Image (tube, rainbow, N blue to C red):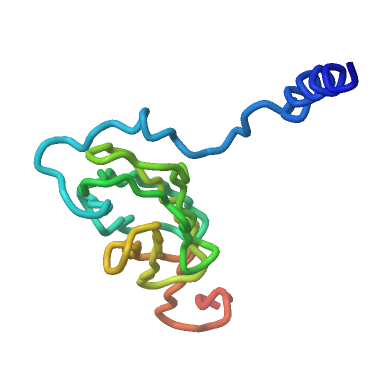
Length: 163
């Protein structure tokens, strides 16, 4: 009788140990990851149509954004691990998620200049792939001009010279 009661108690308590249900993660189950498109092999790698965002001529207070298209040209998925501009005036935005083989996306670069002259900045992208496919650097270029430019011909007091 004691053994039967003990077995029933164990049978009732075992399912109660795992009440939290399956743990949710950000990883895609292997069954949901699509097979790579035909012809794509090797580790995942980002390939951009353009690797330079040229903003041309800007004024000091003019903020502009540019979209750069890319695709995962490798045969495996890749995850964006880190995405940073080399200064506070260059702000890259891209969903930090897994990119399937052959999948396309866009990176938005916002440039808010500070200072005049030719500007050359960078956006660094780090992925979870083995070297040399784990790092990519994009270039941001702009020619920043000031809001006001004074070029005096002659410096003289502002007086009437006819008298």
